[in-house]
Length: 101
Image (tube, rainbow, N blue to C red; front, side, top):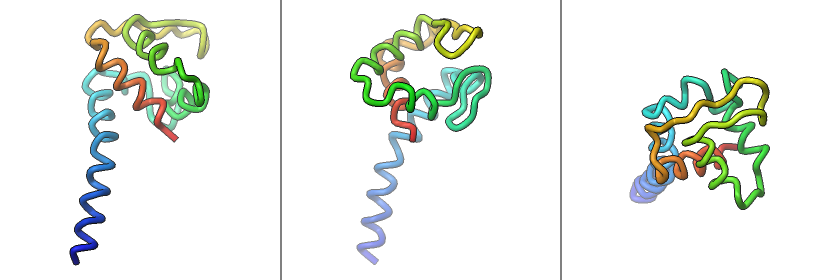
């Protein structure tokens, strides 16, 4: 019984940051144009993670795009700027996106 409770506690702790970052993405309206595993208006987060896998500069680059917007990387539809997202939130979101498998 103790072992089962310990395993559940560890699993909850490991899942909490991922859920928190998804909640942040929802609260900042990111999910209006993006989904974790399918293309909507913009690419899926899994596709973004795959494209930038192994790129040490990806978190900072994506954080900047989240805040300032961008165009041309994923097609003709530009990503608008998101001034409601501060720098720390943008980096947290970028790290979460890059962690999608």
